[in-house]
Length: 324
Image 1 (cartoon, one colour):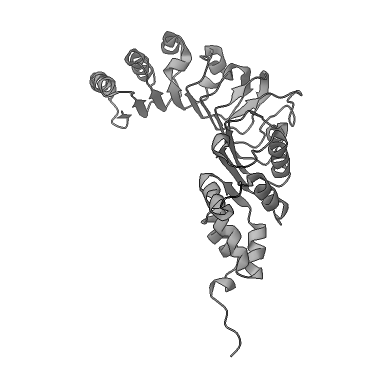
Image 2: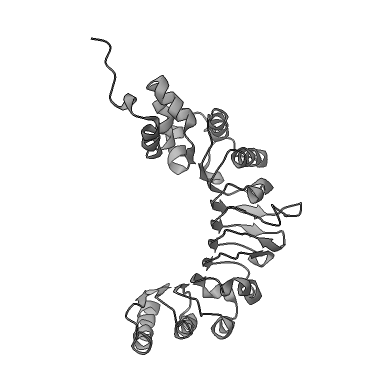
C-alpha cells in the first residue's frame, strides 16, 4: 500500500479556506507547515485579523524580544497570492511593545489594500494620532468600513469618482475620529448606515447619502448643529441618539422630522432629556421600536413610570416595542 494521506488534506480548496476563516490568524499561518497544499491555501487566504488576541500570541512566540508587529504585517501582506477581502487592525499603541506603526506604515498598508480588492476594512489604532490616508476615501471596493482613532485631515480636495467619496461603502463607522477638514457636498452613493461615536467636529463632515437608512450619533463633541442633521433626517428610518449631542434638545422635539422613523434608540444621560424621547414617540406614526439606555437605577425607574403612562396613550398598535 502506498503512503496514506490524512482526510482533510484531500478536501477542496474552498472548504479549506472556510476552515481557515474560523481560526485566529496565528493558527491559520501555522497550517502552512502541514503540507504544500495547506501552504498554498494560506498564501491565498484573504481574511486577516490583527487584534489583541493576535498580539498576545505574538508575545508568547517572541518571548523577551520586542513584538515586531509592523514587520509581521508587512511579511504577511508581501506574501499574499490573492486579494485581501477582509483586513482588521485593532490595537492600542500605548499597550504595544516594540516599534509602533508609523504614518508611513499605515499609508503603505492602506495603499496595498485599496489595490487588492479589500471589501471589509477595520483600522482602529488608538493612542497615537494618525492621518486618514486619502486612498481609503477613493477606494471603490470597500463595502464595510470601520475607522478608529484617525484625524480626518485631507490636504487635497476630495473629488472621488464623479464627485463621490467612499464610493462602494454601505456601512461606515467612525470611532474616536477628529474631523479637521471641511467636506461639503461629498456624495456617498451607496451608504445605508453610518455611525459616529466619541468623534470631534462632525459638523465638518457634510455629505449627501441618498440611500441612508440608519444613523447613530453617540457622544460627539461639540454638539452638532441641527442643520447638519436635516439633509439625512427625511431619509433615515432608524436612529441611535445621544440627546446631549444636540445641545438644545428642545430643537429636536420641535423640528425633528419623524414621518419615516421606525426605530429610535436614545442614550439618556439626564432624566430631563427623556421628555424629548416621548415627544418623538408621539410624533412618529410609523414607530415600531423605542429603546432607552438610562445611566442609573433611579432614572430607569422614573423613565419606566413615564413610559408606562405614555404607552397607555400611544400603544394602540401592539407591534410597538419599548425597551429600557
